[in-house]
Length: 197
Image (tube, rainbow, N blue to C red; front, side):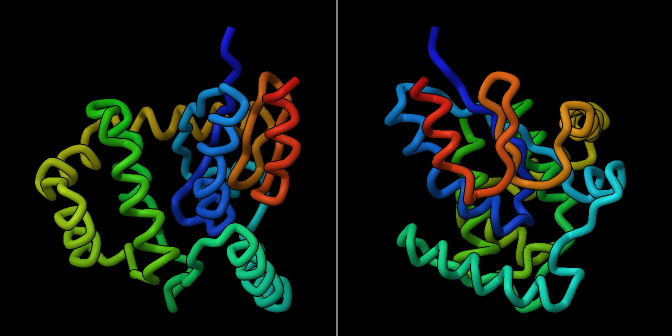
């Protein structure tokens, strides 16, 4: 039976972005698959009493510098937007909706959004900027807006967020190999080892 890793994420998390750049390769090397689990990080924070580390000024400054070091190690661009953190509700409804209605397009969507935010520094909480990024990636903005307003899509995002919290998730990215939780992009070595065993 093929192993898999569940990747609970929000596109507004810079750590999730860095993990996203590495996880497909790690899974492929282990002959495993990635199960993408879009959740709303704000909902997770509210349910668990957690807050974004950038809300603590000194920790936030350190974290962004540290993530830059990790990005250099991975050989990827890391240039978050000036208005970071951003509201990702529409983007995560979009991820849930595309996964539900157009699953073959999810990888392209995540590439456009993750790179838009963290490689190009775009303010993807601005609807006009989102529309341009989507068009450039080959998506129809009207279809995207319909997905984000779809009650079934909204419920899917809520359900995954609630499931994440019930399973012990408190932040992003959170990865499960079986029942074992690995939190943070700096724990990918543990994910790789779990997939190999």
